[in-house]
Image (cartoon, rainbow, N blue to C red; front, side):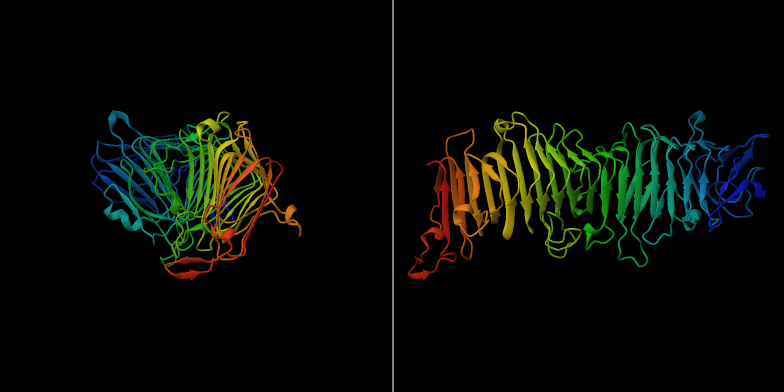
Length: 583
């Protein structure tokens, strides 16, 4: 091979092929006899013809082999000015190309699987040292294209049209640079490697019945039938490493993943640009360490339309954490993000339901030892049409928020201007940590929300740092504190802790603030205090109020006699103070 065809890259000695370079030193190791390889005289175009009905595998080596043309170099490479045409002598063929040189395969020019006469075939390119598809590359494989950054040389001699990646299969990376076009309109585009970097320049850069991206997963695939079997590679496998994916979408319009495509990775993923995930069949991440799913992260730096959490998608509650630095939008239904780790919505970021509701769940299936747990932190904006619901649990104490809980100093918005009459709702519920609801809660309806459900576990604090207006409010769990005001017609406190806003030693200045709203001239307050120690229920009402304490022991401050046995009230000695400006 002429030295002029190689350009050195870095200390590893890898090289970009010369402009006219074509694959070389190929040996057919499985399939029917009759594979031919020719180059048109005076051009950089070669044609590789596979026999009809043949599952053919070719090892492209550093030297030797019987498949060579004038422009051949070691391994499977297509230079920027070169064209490789692959044809089938008849129907029923498939082709596995395995580069064994120890250097990455570069596809910088044109690779076309010819469908003339209706005869075409799915094509795999595999290289355990990596695959790079250049920014001006064009790959057309109508029945399917596989770019696999794994060493599949051991499978070549028994190739039957499908390939498998095991947890111990050695691999490297696949990089598809922005500007490349991949076209498999009659099959799958499948990109898989321990590390995957994909740039998608336009909405039509990738075309296929399915577009699948996998990293850190064991799988079996046939390009005409999509992914047949898959399972995450975990740290239980000796020497295994977590997969990672970086996807850069178009800058001005969305790339939509074809219906029922797969996006699977056992480690981290980072997205940018504009991507539509709403039609994915499977979205799953962060499963490499099953004892701490929250350790792996989906980081969004662009604009994504979220995948629905329905029966088509692996239960996302068994996925890792989510960090949003950009915009996450609803598709054609309510925006439900249900993760096994935590959810962080950073400053300037938005989670927007548009005309749909928003529901965020972080670690809600957390149970001791199951590796699931998280919290929710909102520094940006969370906006739903008629409801916003936030749920978090972290009994395992893992991930970025080991105590779980919910914290918002950003904006929560309910945008339905007639929300109150249509059951508009805010739910903020933590099962394992404190809650701080600050920032702003913007409600488009001047009558406020129809209902708010606020919940924090016993022994924890729900701190209200921003005003809230809801016709009906339920406050459950531990203590409810903070300087803000709840404007409401009816509120239920079912608590084991205190309800107050302690600012000093004067009880008259330590009340938890309530106010009458536009629904009625009175606020009805229902109190059930069922703690195991003294409780302070101190309420300051702007306007009129009625208080019902029922039969709670708190206000009897006495013992009870049941069946002749006298039982002290567990919270005897508690206090109720109501300070109303009205009656």
